[in-house]
Amino acid sequence: MLKQRDLQECQSLYHLMIDPAVFPYVRNKSQSYEEYLFTTERLIVEEEQGTSISRTILNETGHPIGTIDLYDIGNKTGFLATWVGIPYFGKGYNQRAKETFFSELFLKHNIETVFLKIREQNIRSKKAVQKLPYVKLANDINPPLYHLINYTQQHYDLYQVDRLDFLDTRNVVQAY
Image 1 (tube, rainbow, N blue to C red):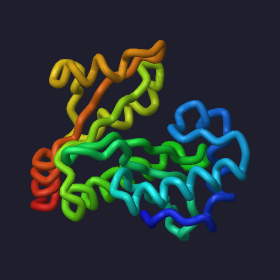
Image 2 (image 1 turned 90 degrees about the vertical axis):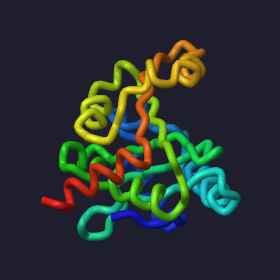
Image 3 (image 1 turned 90 degrees about the horizontal axis):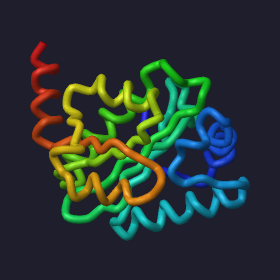
């Protein structure tokens, strides 16, 4: 379902990313295919340096359908960014990708907390994240960070996933 990023998938991903229903919500926007190649190369280097972790989301046939990234990694925390192409909306890929990625982050990379900032007007993403039992609205839990991410004209809600909450939820689900 997830794989490390490489340049061979860039053309497929670029065409999915530029869709008007997806593009406004992509963190690393690219105005051209060449820029998307450069951005992907940069993400690969950042992962080697330990400042980000980036994966390609695949469908059942192994075709690239989106990306999921942890960026601004520091002090065992980071921010999550994810998108899937419009043909894959509403099919559960985003939730499965998040769960697989959180498992990797918390079990292999020693991450303790993952933050998600979601634009207030991005109803689709807010509804999707609120379905996950281990996600907490963190506007009031972490006021300094909430105010920091809202210093621009864009206004975000802050969510967080703590390692222990995620692992506890997984153990309950696996017990059934």
